[in-house]
Length: 134
Image 1 (cartoon, rainbow, N blue to C red):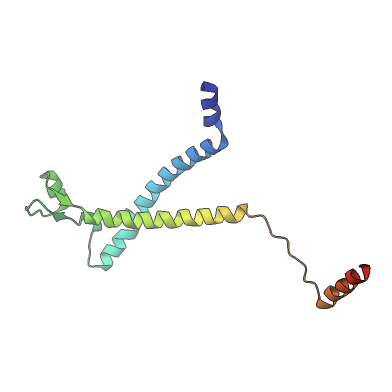
Image 2 (cartoon, rainbow, N blue to C red; image 1 turned 90 degrees about the vertical axis):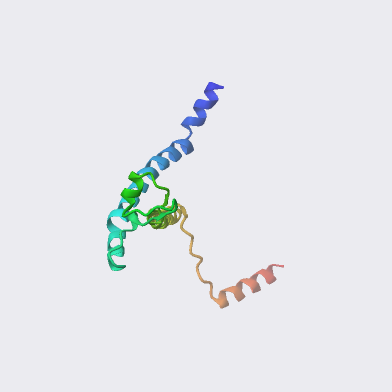
């Protein structure tokens, strides 16, 4: 049983999948940072100096000046700004993964052999030859 488990772990697919998870986690962190620090600030500025990461709705009945104040008071809030950032991160990450898979699939495709165009006269001559053979 141990030998079978060892064989399962060492198979190429498992190693490839493990490497994919490691790179995926690291890449996800980079995309999250790009969205939070590069993409969302200009969008927020264009929309009237809105910091999406600080948008929230207090649902405990209290009023808070900022998200930091609400968290310090342990208030119950819905952090919809952080949710917007996460959606943007997800869309960008999904698009990048789509492009990577698309490129990988193009690399895997075997080149198709081009079929030489046969002239109609050649086809007719072949048909005549085949009928004469019969």
